[in-house]
Length: 342
Image 1 (cartoon, helix red, strand yellow):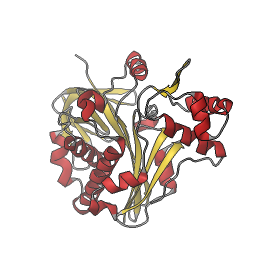
Image 2: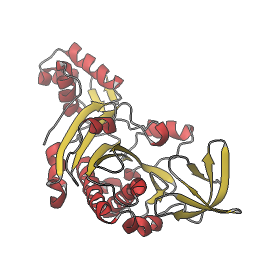
Image 3: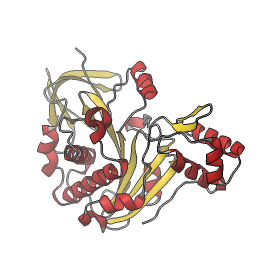
Image 4: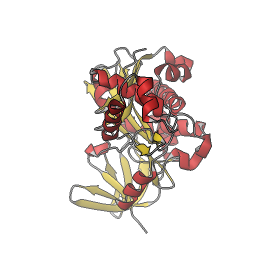
């Protein structure tokens, strides 16, 4: 397995990583002790702390106590992730890249694709500076608060109903969440997982290749594990409603490496089934967890707003709503969807 700790090569990147490893327990560490452990001056420690803060790591400092993270964090570890992935998937996973910082895990995977049918590559990052959601929206993931991962998967030929790829990914995430005891998660077309109507995870899928030939798909997953209080307040103020796994599972929340391995396993298993059977195999399961089914909704398409009742999805993954003019069908490339508030 390939392990990458940072995308830049300066020696300070290694020291930042070492410093982060010392702080992830969430306990207080004095500047003097950190300096001794790193073999640098206290001034150098302060500079490293400031760089990490600029990168988005929430490091607190207290007089006569030292530095600490606002909460303990388990760092990603490629060997631990690999060992926890289902045995039948391990041989198909060609590489795991663990990055300290990256602009986008999807972009990284696009530069290092899988190269054999039904094989995959995985990238996880501690800090993602330019993560994207659907339609170019930013995905906010403060350090240690969630999962930022991308799985690259190679198809020699496109599965039937390939346009429904994002919906198949949603089913894989639901299966993974059910495994850890979160049975109330729902799907919101086309790419969100929700809990009690609030966003828990999001998906961004991309494709590299030709419709008639071998294709490399990139599946980006962002999942909220334990959002900092300050970030929750900011999102609430911006009228963005989110949920995280700690809110639902508390201390039963699996560690990050185990959760990445579980999600990876279900993604790879679903991609294998998708390659053999297409979306038809997943359609009824997706509709079972459709959080908008039979609800009044409005679809935004450019300057046009269409009101109707959600009626599930078609065999190609298009969203269906019932309107006074009859059933209308929308594709992910053209539609922005939100439930009507009562």
